[in-house]
Length: 240
Ligand code: GLN
Image (tube, rainbow, N blue to C red):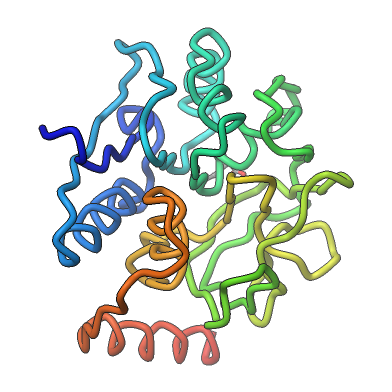
């Protein structure tokens, strides 16, 4: 691995990674390589300490028990917190939003302390939200609609230091009745979109990649198959 290799942290894929969320790291690596940038995925498992020196981090969703194992590990080895404090980009999917908040309540009603990278808390909704999610982003630098598949019982309430990622067009999102989806705080982005989210939303992938590379502009990639996938997924959301 050369000095200039982009290092992508895939955090706890052994316990967090439902619906192929590990694919988000693959998408980042592929979009970097297609631009001639050397990139590697570093897997961080429950057997590893969490390094704070990687260029970008991704975390996937999980069921309640796996989510608790991940929470305990990230609390014990706070490398992700140091990386986020230093402005490294982080993408957190579904259960990972909840783990990165102040606390979450499981469907069994137990409250678990999170790692407070997001100013938010999560409690179970009356019913589980399952299905296609289509949203319009509300953060600078993102203009294209976002799409993903959601499956969660938790609903997340954002505090003053956190902003939503998007407004819901179709589906549920954060699930607390305000029409918001996802969360952005500093360099950390969370979303309830599985899919994997970055395969469906190349603009979001490049947003993270640009930040990881410390640049404002990345040469666009023309990938007709990705454009076709997006058209299909956005239509599926409308049919819903
Ligand atoms: N266990 C969490 C919930 O149901 C997260 C689920 C997920 O990551 N898909 O809210």
